[in-house]
Amino acid sequence: MNVTVKDIPVTQLNKQHLVEWRRHLHENPELSFQEVQTSQFVYDTLSSFGNLELSRPTKTSVMAKLKGAKPGKVIGFRADMDALPIQEETNLPFASKVDGVMHACGHDAHTAILLTVAEILSTKQEELSGEIRFFFQHAEELFPGGAKEMVEAGVTEGVDMVFGLHVASQLPKGKVGVIFGPATSNSDQFELTVKGQGGHSSQPDKTVDPVVISAQIITNLQSIVSRMTSPKEELVISVTTLHAGEAVNVIPNEVRIGASVRSLTQDVRNNAMTAVERLVKGITEANGATYELDVAYGYDSVINNEEATAIGERTLKRKLGEDAVLHGSAIMGGEDFAAFANSVPGCFVFVGAKEKDDPSPAPHHHPKFRIEEDAMEDGVKYFLGIAEELVF
Ligand code: NI
Image (cartoon, rainbow, N blue to C red; front, side, top):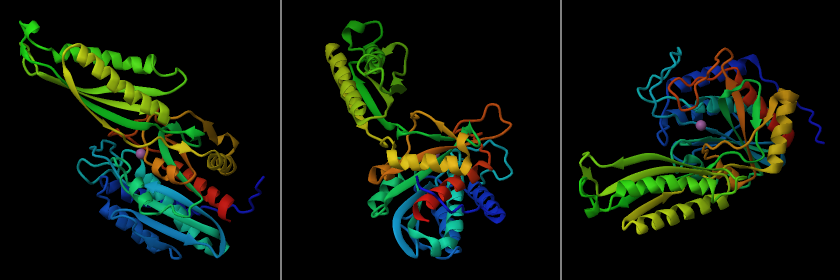
């Protein structure tokens, strides 16, 4: 058992900064790949701490290195910084000042948390054995994502382990969701055009009706989940867009179908897309139609490394209390932390941030999304605890 001697405190001033920074970011949200002011704010704030080596791995991301006086492990902490194209409806005094753009996923909190961790740890350089890298990542919300770009820029070279977190508006404050293995889903999609032969609705025999064929396809897609995938595996196929025809007395030439496909493992992911094409090919062919299928593979599933996650869990219990940890199963949302976790062993946890007196908190990506600000301190303690255990 690793006996940790240090317990790095979070001061009143740190807590004050945490809230100030989060509110500043919340008021000034920027969309993915456009985080110009945000990354400058992060860069300038980090510059004010001292002891950090700052760089810009990409145009709107920031990396800070804190190199210890003694050799040791190299660990990475990651926060994402981008907002969403949503009109805020929270009525908060520090609501977004930008029309149609909102921090509706809590990335403002993530950035403020990591800034605070950097503020605290930057004063401990003399006692540090090893190195801490702070990754302030752009564009989590928009594929291909900023994480991949940062990893390709080499930020994880030489890193032993990487840690990240997400606030969770529907998980009670004081609880942290820890998941071993797959934690988020592979997030893929496809667009399908079923090409028939249009004509008059009164003469269906003279057409190849893509609407009826599409109905068969949509119904059959669910068999991939229920009949072609093990009941012990997770898979979601949701047809989410459907466009056909303009007039009720005309059978259209084609139907366009869009769908989202979510899975946890590479096997299920690949089998699902193979089955989609097989069904589409078979059904269209059987009915004399043709098709065009465009598959877009999105973020990989975040796979939490066994050892890193055990460290994360132990740290949470030590810093937040034995009953703070909730063991969950994977969520079927996407998260580009996967690019970091594919590059080096990683752990991604969900920090409860439900508002105390809100019985039905808004979900993430909702115009009324809010968090309990006190919960950010749990995030700070999590990162500090990891540092205490691995590099102090
Ligand atoms: Ni998010």
